[in-house]
Image (cartoon, rainbow over all chains, first blue to last red; front, side):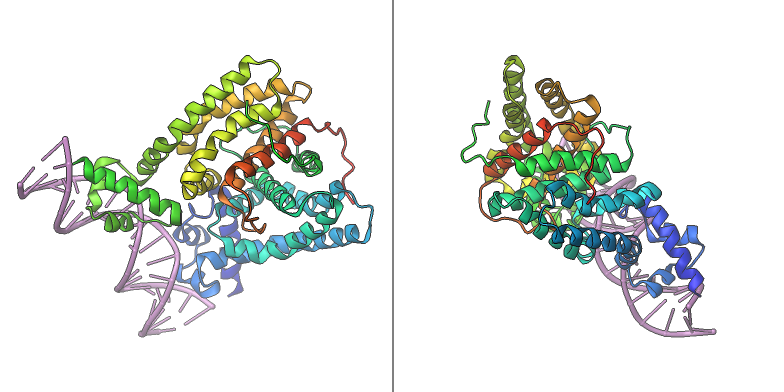
Length: 202
Length: 202
DNA sequence: GTCTATACTGAGATAGAC
DNA sequence: GTCTATCTCAGTATAGAC
């Protein structure tokens, strides 16, 4: 039955989002879904492939929005850093309001590094395109510096999605405003003058 | 014998750093260390407590350096954002050169969120002090905005330590220069003018 | 106090009957 | 397609030798 597969998918998404990927056992999923343990392997192959299908379902539409917005930026020689970042980041805002736990899950599996294959499959293409377009908006930044700054940006994005163990989470504000704040922060960072030899020690 | 405990500690640190915490089994550790499985529980209590002791060993000296540098900043009313960030971040540079894999491990366990207890125990106090001092260097930033920016900074730091699945890692530069670049980036972000209603969509 | 042997529980995965 | 039984490998707990 397709019903079995669907029940697994729905239950797994809820449990992964609530408890995280590693903390959710397949036995817990099948118990709540009322199906047999082997059904997961029959329909998906493995626990990781189950996650993969979950991610594809939600991320596909977001990535299509991203690509459309990014190509509009690419066609506009006057596109600002803020607009390009917005094209990449704001399409998350919709799903983030509808499925806040899912966004948290995505941030966590990105940060975990364990599921590198899943991440690369769903984000490598669009993130590469994003960086290529962003690159042209800040031509004055040397290549190596640009890559590091992209690194910082992705770290900040993941953290914004999944929450920090150390900083008290400011409760106010929806996800969209969080993203807008992040864009303000990171755009200033990308425009910062490159320091040759820093004098930062106190 | 203290020898057994020491062998476990050394072997575990190496394997955790090479393969990550979750991916390293206790049976793998004891096989390479040439000790018995139960010895880990006798000396440490659990796998997580073993990690805890590993972290404490390396992080203790770093945190003492941090606190000393931070208090120098606190005593100086003219301390810049860059200097305060440097006080918090540059003490990692030394260990990062000597034990690069260990730094990567720290970034990963921070990002994972699973070992929240270990992270809080070793970093909560010093990071709280850091944020309090940094707060006074940017009084013009509203409180909520400041907390989010701190959030972005911590995400970028963790990512710098553990590497990203999406951005091609720039190979050049030692860890200290990475931190200095990050400080330039984040200081500009903290100083950015707060946008009331952003106009970032393309 | 230190360490060994062994057993327990729960995880993901798989083969084969129906 | 589905289910039972079973396999391997985790982390953990305990009894007891020295």
